[in-house]
Image 1: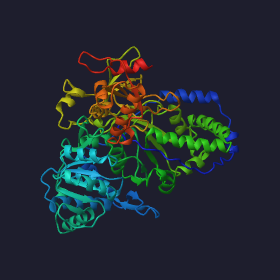
Image 2 (image 1 turned 120 degrees about the horizontal axis):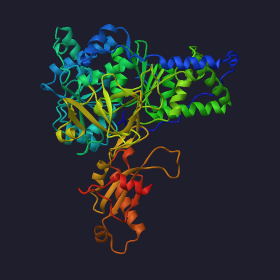
Image 3 (image 1 turned 60 degrees about the horizontal axis):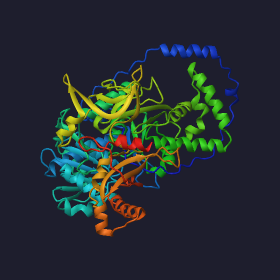
Image 4 (image 1 turned 45 degrees about the horizontal axis):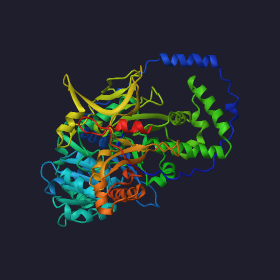
Length: 625
């Protein structure tokens, strides 16, 4: 799923692998004729979907789960960095949500449909806040905690937020922009017991007040009925300038994700998901939170990226949602340790034999690769990769050591699932197949079957916030059905599996799956007088071909008249470049780190343009190649 924020993956540390020899494996004789017959029979087997759930709202999910799984743990979080994980039950979660929702209704004068912005790292109070809004009155606005203060201010203003729920770590940012956001009615601080003081109030205070009201017979919150198609969530796709789009999602959009996954993947109450990705993105908040709640699973919160390995070992999750960069780093570190122990030959032999045995119905991978599994917690059975392409050999390796490897595809606009690998029909390398309730088709395919991916799905957004024109540009209504133009280029194989081969839109996607919209950065650069025209793009690393990360670059046509007026005539090329680069560095300060321009090219000729004077990006990039 596209749109995840960029983050630096730390240097994982695994102990030295011993990988003891297993003579019982070495002695296994593989009957290759039987193996071939088994493979042929497997191809003939009919691949059937599981019976999907039929939720229409997240409220249905919440009401059912807090009853069915009341005594079971739902969230595991380490509140004391040096302490143990605290387990919070579905029963307590339900009471906190209902208490908080009741207090928002009764203690604060928020009106009929308040807009509630959530600004925090992943923590229990984030989950409570989000579920409270989804099951009550109002619109949830999950917001990237990494936004610079100026962008955060823009989000608050554009979304018309009535309430901001924030963590201690974001208190300083809120304080800085406070004078500019006078329309916000209340600032609710997580884990605070402070009573109402003007616009400020503690979240824990409200939860306890709400619980008291409920205990005395106030059941108004629990009697709210959510309409499946009402506007419940507002998400900004990238940044918050005037060019960024706000995606409007309904409760049905989110619920249909749960229904969709349930047809392709079986999750059980014993399953535990490991939360390492940011919750403001629909990939984590929907598939990493709402889905496990629907299945009675638990969610373990990672303390931070540098704690991934010890946290995995402490919480022993069964499923991990990740971006490719995280999986690639786990793969590299584990294999580097195996090679250092001079066990790589043995491991390759074990993979060969265990793959052959699995085909004929004997799966001993978890036993053979137990040491690797133990380093990942010991119970990991599913890894899901999404947000950006991943090397197929890494997905194959995950399966080789006995972990189910799935890939997902979607966008914020599809809330986010549009395609997913069925666990009973793996196909490493593809982005999955259309979820059972959706349909994919390729628009105007070329001779290779490649074209823009169009999506028809019940997970498709209501539209772009306050931008009907932009909505109509990406959604075609054909015979009463809404088809979304994804902006991605790909093809479908004979079995309906999707392969993404490029982007038709201008978006630059980092290895972590974060979107960078060139127009957004260009808008800031256009305000620099010394820049006449510019084009932002992702440039391949020529010095290191193995580096898949694109370098954020810009081609600039200098404004020579402005330069001469301010810096004198007869400027050398080097001096012009230094001046422009200095201006770009000033613009970089206004951007989040992953959007910052790292490379500058001064362009002396004109950009190739369309008849409407738009730069032909494809043509310009083709010149480079």
